[in-house]
Length: 185
Image (cartoon, rainbow, N blue to C red; front, side, top):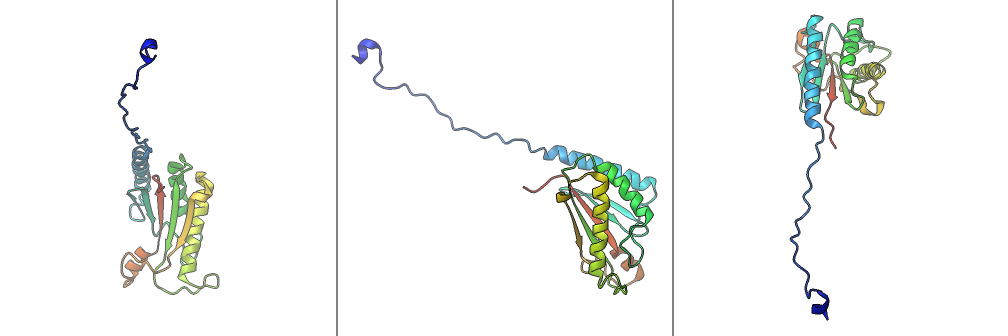
């Protein structure tokens, strides 16, 4: 009966190929290009304001690292940004605010001279307050989502040079801003 109706006794063999997942573009290359462009813009702003010694800009694997030192930082024992610091941070904000998904981490650092202030019990507290004031300023000016921002205070515990001279102490008093364009998943 199978032969009469043209029904085959076996099914023809159809080659089956495994499904190959084609990786989706994550956009990381585009984000890297954007971080390079933004870093160059920030460098141009820093140079135009003649702040090359006070503000350093570097490109990292994930985005941009910005270091602010005197004279744009803070007065001794204070967490209030100097006007020059506010101005340069506003300029930086103007460059990075186009992407509210960026991750921003601000680190505060001090030298090892003990603080004598009624407001701060230690350099650790002072560095934390300084980084928080920068986060608040960046948050208000960039539109970056608050859940993507953090402030960390390291006090005198992560110096970049030994605290053996006034010049070295000055280098250790800094704010570091890490703007991540590429996020860990």
